[in-house]
Length: 254
Image (cartoon, rainbow, N blue to C red):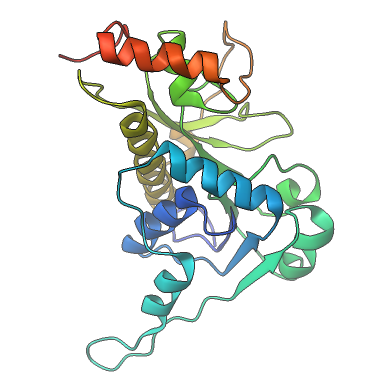
């Protein structure tokens, strides 16, 4: 469908990743229903899921993908049929495994709901691009563990929705928004708030597509003074927790 209507899209995520579960709940609530969901079921997916669950420990988690799809499939209150969305698993999100499921689909978009880095033919397939929400302010905080590195380097904390290219979090931006960080928030709180905000921004990006506003929303990222970050080691996390405990992070709103 052309921009200005609801897009036809595939939704990709690591198996039952809390990031993707939250995002799916947000976009379904606005009536954006994927044509297909493709989960990666792998050791990496298990590791990433457990890592994120640890990062947001103590905060609520959206329903599983299967539970959300079961709700979607239920008949409506006046007897209208539910919506059945195919949900398939692949051992890795690469072109060899994903393209057989979508090559015959005329997709407007592919939406990433928490995946590893994906390159190649998948990025070229949908008519209007592949979009991702990242739990950091781009271009200043690319890569992994963005809330941790944001506190460590005194970068504002937030999330961004962007187009995917062959780089790491380098595609054109659609939306960025900061989290209001107040004294007393923990690292787990910041990870959770950026996760939820990432889902909100994806919903807002799809609403922008439906309204035909992407041409005015999209813009280049620009450059960053920081490198692309990798997972934060224990010594970095210790500094992060100390700064939050001592209220020495530079971007509190109170």
